[in-house]
Image (cartoon, helix red, strand yellow):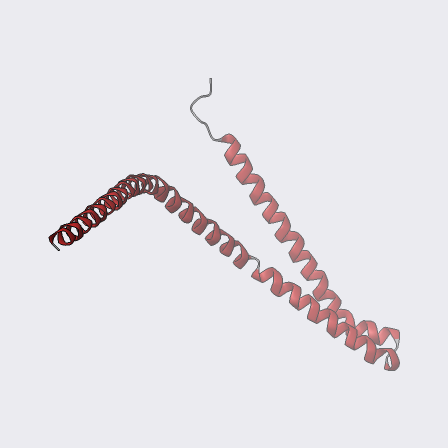
Amino acid sequence: MEDILYLTLLIVAIAFAITVIYIAVVLFRVAKLLKTMGSTLGRVDAEMKQVLPDLKNTLQEAYVTVSDIEEKLTTTDPLFATVENIGNSVNNINQALQKADSKLTSSEFEKQTKPYIEGIRWTETAFYLYNKWKKKEQDMEVSNVSMKQTGKEG
């Protein structure tokens, strides 16, 4: 009976040793994995420190660009309002034409449509002057940029 007890204790001791060896191997692999993960996170941290300022600058430039686009779109609002007014005028002329076609003589029709035609002429004149003014302003900006001295001139 003692032999069985010693044999059982031997088997338990061997099983315990195998378990301890297995746990040691697993812990060694976990330690190695954590060490690798730590070095990887260190590299990621260093790369993030380099990327974040660039990303911040890019976002600031995007904000400036969006603000500039918004400002330029706002300056086109009067243009679209004028186009809308022209459309309304053309619509009114068409309605007047339809009504006048059956009722008015040509001289009466010309007399009634004269204010609309004058409005369209003044609108075209305003567009022409506005475009000419913008072109002159752009030409001045180009000449100012080309005339700036860099200090490298001979």
